[in-house]
Amino acid sequence: MPFRLTRGTWLALAALGPAIFVAIQPLPILRSVFLLLLVVALLALLINPLADRLGRRGVARGLTVALALGGTALLLNGALAAVCGDDWPNDDVAGGGDRGRDRLGLRLLRGAVRLL
Image (tube, rainbow, N blue to C red; front, side):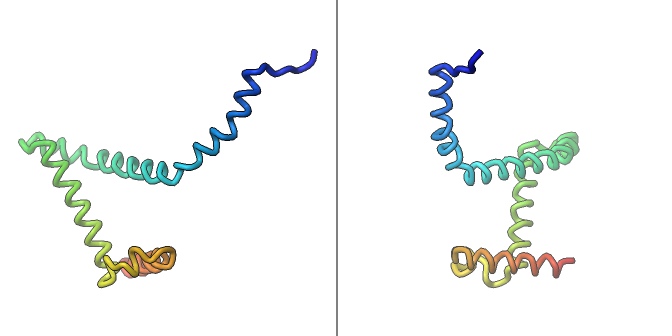
């Protein structure tokens, strides 16, 4: 019995190439979105016990979440400012293309080594 493909199968195979090409285009954006969602999910897991404890003492859950996220943002900005020093934010480091990114990465690495 010969193996035969229907017209619909051939059309699906022909459409697979352009579909893969179109799907590959937004991958960098999707990676950023998924990373952001992962960070937010982990922060939500970390904030939940704190919000429960403060909720028992009468503090609103929304206020607890806002303060925890704001504190986290301040902590991360402070760490970045401490590591980068006077060069942050600076167009030479922040917007300097690959060279600026490489310099920023080296500064972050040196700062992390200093902290250890």
